Length: 375
Image 1 (cartoon, one colour):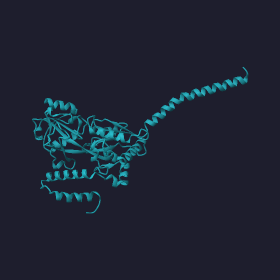
Image 2 (cartoon, rainbow, N blue to C red):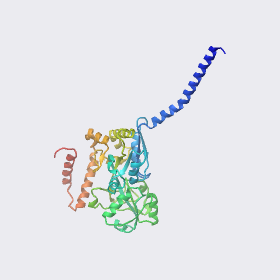
Image 3 (tube, rainbow, N blue to C red):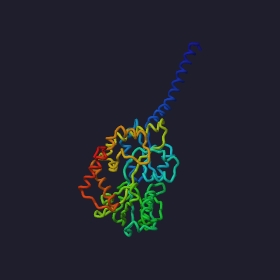
C-alpha cells in the first residue's frame, strides 16, 4: 500500500475512533447534566404522618416554591414530632422538619438527643389542637382515671402533650401506642377508653367520623401550669359535624409548631439551598394566605420568636431586613386571637369578666405595643 494511502487510512481510523469515543461519552455527560439539574436547590422537608395536616402545609410550600429549575422542595412523610427531631439530627438528606414545640422542649429537657440545643428554627408556624375522642358513656376527662388512652404511635408528639395534660390534671392513664386510625376502631369496640390525638383542625381522620359512630370529643381544661406552653382553643361543629353538637362547642388546648432546621455547615451546598428556600418562603409568604392554600397559614406570624431557641441565621437576617412586613397580620385574626387569649386568662385567674369597653381599650394598647408605638 502506498505510504500516502496508509497515512490517509490511519487518519480516517483515528477520526472514527475519536468520534466513537465522543459518542460514548455523550450519554454519560448528558446523564451527569440531568443529575445536576435534578439536585439543584433541593430541600427535603419532613412533615407528620399521612393523616396529619402538616403534610398539606408542606405540599403548599412545594406548590409555591418549587420552580423545577433553581429550587426543588421535596415533601417527606414522617412518623411524628419526636421521630422527626431524631431524623433531622441523624438522617441523611432531611433539611427541615415540622415539629411540635412542646416535643422540642421535651427532647431538650430530657436530654434525649445530644446536641439538640444547637439546632435552630426557621419560623414558628401554626397551632395543632389536642383532640380527646371518647364513647358516649364518657362525659368528663376525669372519668379516664386508670383507663387505657391511646397516645398515637411511638415517636409521635401526642404522647408528650397527653403526658403533660393528664399530669397537670392529676389523672393517671394507661397509655397505648396504636396508629390513630386503628385506635379509633379499638375505641368503637370498647378495647380502649379514649384516643388522644394532636393534629391541626379539622383533622381528616376525625372529620370523616359521623354521628352514627357514637363517639364525641371531650373538653380539656387549660390549667394555669400549662398556660405558658399551650393556648386555649375551641372545636366546633363546623370542624367536626359528626362529633360536636352545634350548641355545645368543645374547649381544648393547642400546641404550637415550628419549622426546625438541620445542623448544616454554613459553607455547604445544603446550607445555601435552605437559605435560598427561606428567602423565597418568607418573601412569598403572603401568597399562602390567599384562597387555595390551607387556612392554617393565617395563624402564622413569621416574626414570632421561639423562646429559648436560636433562629436559623438567614431567617433571622430576613426578619431584620423586613421587620414591618414580617409582623403584618390580618386585623380580624389578631382581634379574635386576642379576645380568646384574654377570656381564657381571666377564667384561669378567676377574675371577673371584662366589659367590651375594657377589652377595646386593652386591645388598642396591645396593638400599640405590637407595632412598637408608645401608648
